[in-house]
Length: 377
Image (cartoon, rainbow, N blue to C red; front, side, top):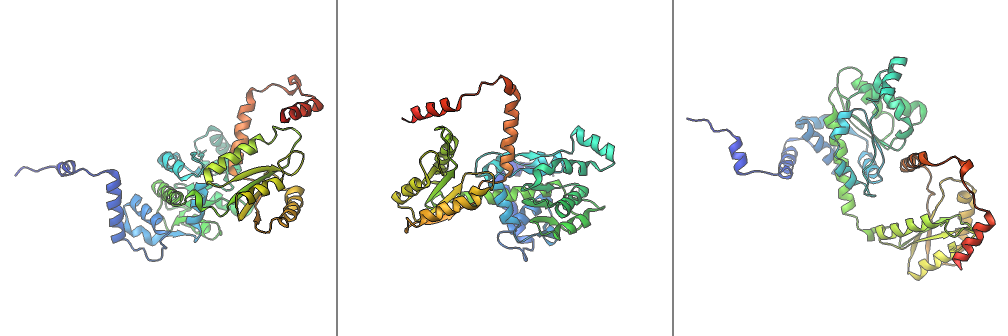
């Protein structure tokens, strides 16, 4: 009897990749022991099992209680990712990460292990290349998603930075594979008090690291799709800047307010502390006119100086006495964020073609103010 290749049955009733994934997940749910994992954690574990092809992997997966919520939040905020190998970077879906990001942009993915300066530094110092790569990445690791899928020495160096230098990544996905330094690197990670996902023992590898990131991204996408613009905790938002005699000084803040209003589906008003209207009182009056009940006031300041610490709270308290029906919440100032580092880096690139300051004409201050006042009139 002639043997019939099995692929013919598949081709006669083809299944899509989505169908196969759904069937695979159903099979994993039937075979694997999900006890010990919450409903929030299980999709992460299930995708790891799917990547490994091993239902028994569930017995070795460990994650902090806040791993999923923190990882999802980091991806929704567009935090950068640091990965220890190009294999992990190649495996990550840019489309999925972009969909997970609330701002619609693909987050930056950094991998320095193949850089020539890292190789030179490793040769000069005798350090493993993975350690030299992590040290090069130090300026972008705070608040980042750190993904270690291959090198235990990379994870050990990340652990050291957390312990000795106060590094605070958003989450560490630490799943290096192998038999040397692997188990102790993971155990140390679990003892650090940072959000983490890992696999006990010698198991691990780039496919598992990618699986964790993709599972968190899928959770972020689901959270975004289940949250409508009307679900905001505030009925209106006020961006409070410093103010300037130059009428166009707050143009960027006003533009941000407009975009936020469209994106969030709530009124967002821009105003100034002094120098030029609209002022805080004007913005709050507009909130009241819009029948807002709970209003967020965000200081449009990067640095946390006297204005943020004392002047703005006093100003808002004074205005609160005039608006008994408004619940006024003073939010944090802009402060540090990895996305701001990206913006500064972008400005550095843009500045490469700009001339020496000695050749730049600087407008007279009185003339500049007069021009802007005539525009305002």
